Length: 201
Image: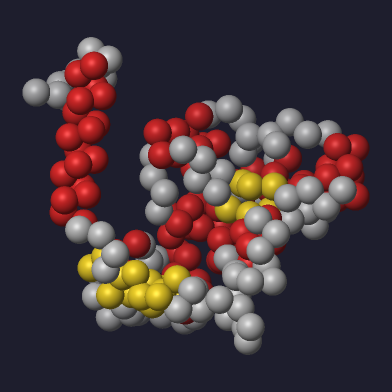
């Protein structure tokens, strides 16, 4: 969506097309999507835009706290508007707009009667929550990170409690993933790239 014309944006709006903005991947790729200002134009046209991460290799992470922060701030330099996007819109893009993009907004994306009980409970005891004059949404987007998540409930089922995954053996899973990654690197004869003066030993 980095190179759409004004006419194409109108078509997106008319057809009710849903767009995923993968701001971290766009920034990491250096493809000019942020500089091109098309994302702000799409948003100003009221096209439904959700927040995405793309793949972990390109974006560097799937941490939605980081993605919300980046989305809330990255366009300000080019629009020269310190209020553009902001915490509230970035939070909506990661919740209700994401549900709309998946055509599931009648089931998930917000806390309403009749919708599935999907909840993320955060621990607000850390210093990042004590920023003066900042409400919970702004603290969540601008200062929090995934380490703040204490409990996760999906459709009424507790899948994480006290930062411990309840549905799998997390340590075993991490070990399996690490082993699979190592085997993949060996099969492909791949070594991590490094630049002097920071060699990988």
